[in-house]
Image 1 (cartoon, rainbow, N blue to C red):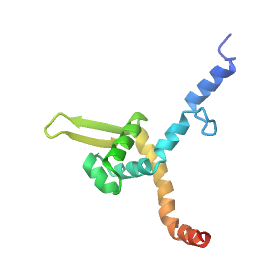
Image 2 (cartoon, rainbow, N blue to C red):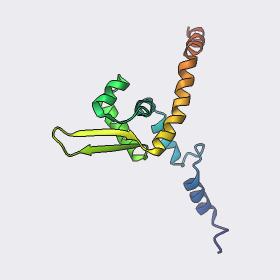
Image 3 (spheres, rainbow, N blue to C red):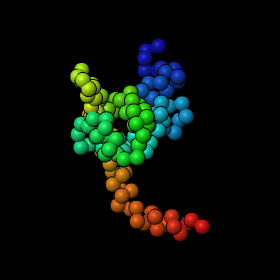
Image 4 (cartoon, rainbow, N blue to C red):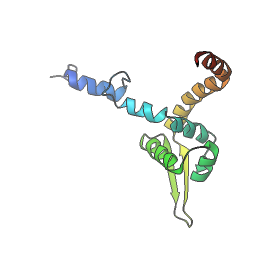
Length: 133
């Protein structure tokens, strides 16, 4: 076989590696979507747009997130390559978080969505109040 006629399974795998398919239940892009668009994932990306923050600064800036949930969210976003964790070997430990280039790109997309929400919250809440019994 000359490589231009890969099997359909290989084609699906290569296609998934080049671009995901969120509508496919097997595509790993769904997991990224879930982590990236979770409440805390969105807020972490937005908070880190302003620059590097330590864990406690990040927690204060976001507000309402537990230590456990923030730590879990940071670990997941770091695993996806969106956040860089830097730990300095000092006492007390100093750990800071910042966006990677890919994280900055993702934060820009998320920022557009959150800006839209903030700009339209009045209309959304008005509509919601008409729908709630």
